[in-house]
Length: 332
Image (cartoon, rainbow, N blue to C red):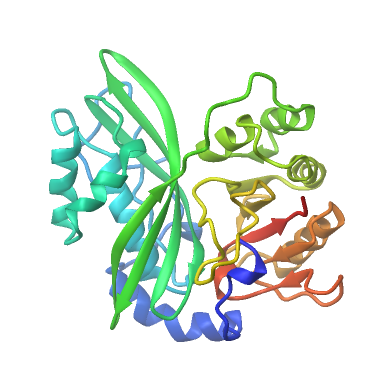
């Protein structure tokens, strides 16, 4: 996501936005009690969301929940629940027809299942874990929520690990959000021999990549500057990437301007050294240092929840869309 992904009108500051939306939106999302830190799963003590307990061979998972730190938690929760409903099922409940029934139970159009093929591989049962849900764009009446997930399927006695990232498009009427479309990532086939920097990224334990991002790098369609910057940042930080190329809107959300992501010239980071960018408890100093180091690593366009002074013209930016991740864009 680049700076141009922001609405035409300048959005309010992060603290103003959070203060205005948190209580009302969280109530609309139907959440109560204490959520997991930064809205992400406690992997050590999970429960399966949206389906019966898995049989041996499938991991247990936790339903993703937003926190009060989100700009529009109800929008994210709506998108996530759709992906969880389609991509997880118990024995005997696989296939598109069963997925349509689960989507209908959410009060959403069953035709959405027709665009969700990557979430519905042939399998007896499946478990799905949402890693992160970040904005691909947020406007007053519409949003793109990028749901990053891992999926495990079981069939014929074999368990397979996979996953994807889904760009879920939503619109708002009053305080309610509904889903109008979804676009799963389509990274393309892997090349036979990735570039050396890409191979180094794929093997670096300090760079945590979700399935769609791994496939993006293996496809040979990611600019070498992206890989080099990741490696440079990994010398100082442990970075958890949300989105690289696929699963992101083709154009800057709400405009007709091409985004850097689909051209393989950007990546987003949702967690730094174990601290979620969206979490208000995360040190602003840590985020500021990371953003400046991303610029030093070659990014011409660094966005996040903090507006930094200095840099070249337009090098640093902040808006409501980027309150939950740090974006680093690169020139071709």
